[in-house]
Amino acid sequence: MGRLLAVDLGAKRVGLALSDPRQRLASPLATLAFKGERKLLAELLTLIREKEVEAVIIGLPLREDGSEGRGCQMARGLAGKLEGRGVPTVLWDERYSSREAEALLKEGGLKRRRAVGKIDRVAASLILEDYLSSLA
Image (cartoon, rainbow, N blue to C red; front, side):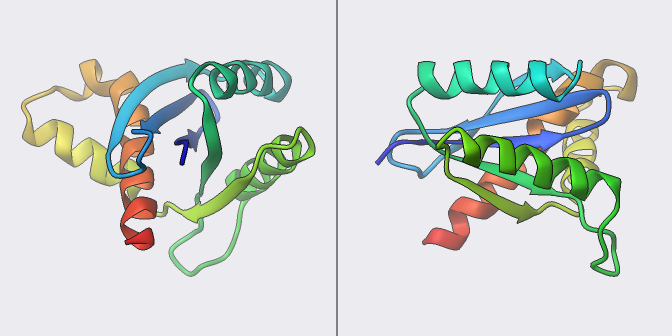
């Protein structure tokens, strides 16, 4: 069993979370600045190799009614590029992950201005936790 990497893809920032090797725990990992798909793909492939990642879980930002918008197109595009490089991917419904992450950080006393980069990686962690719990 290898680690899983979760990706919360945004127009400005990309949140990342990583599981333990036994795929039981999800931990926020990093927030990357989104500087284009090509650069993101290179950064992810490096992380996948360094952290011995088995598969990537990509948040699929469906709208409340279940329809797809631009964010879903970006997620599907990234998944296709990773799959083309031999990396197994899973698209995972992440409709409320960013809102939940923001609420958790606010509960912890972190002000919105200081939480900006943290929201993305915590959202990725919530996506990964949800995915891991579905495996149990």
